[in-house]
Image (tube, rainbow, N blue to C red; front, side):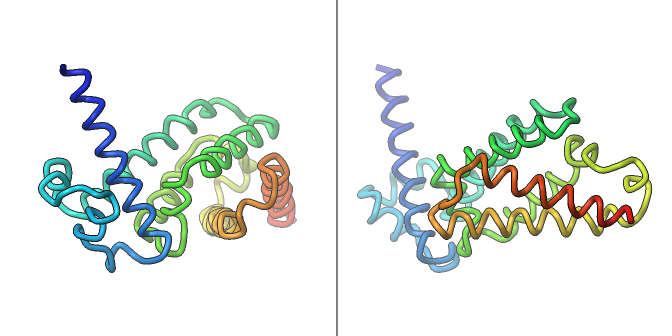
Length: 190
């Protein structure tokens, strides 16, 4: 009985989450009510409130799940230092984005800007990102500006890629991102 109940709870939460993500394809969380979510999910408001305080709590939990997944994915590359591993890491992130409707919505124009900033902040602190740059750059104040430039550009490129139906294959986009990053590192060292 408990397993059946757990399955029903998981299903209900999935429907609620999917409904919010569907609504956020066209509008900001600021313009979405609990009633909108419940209508689309075909559930009662009381069912919604059993699981979430409000639409913001729901969004926060979706974002936290995405951040935990990304953190676990990136941890695998903490001790990797070469370009092949860097490309694999980028490919895994892009594949996650390509296969996950929620992350696509969260990174879209209607996604939460604070979530996007959190991803940016987490990425700037990753060892595999910092180790990609020469030691000389890591000791210079230039690196902070460079991180901002590269990571904002990468997130912007991913957003463009999502908006254009992920028209570039993952391996090709990962190689492009690495090539452009290498080019910028070389330019900065001149």
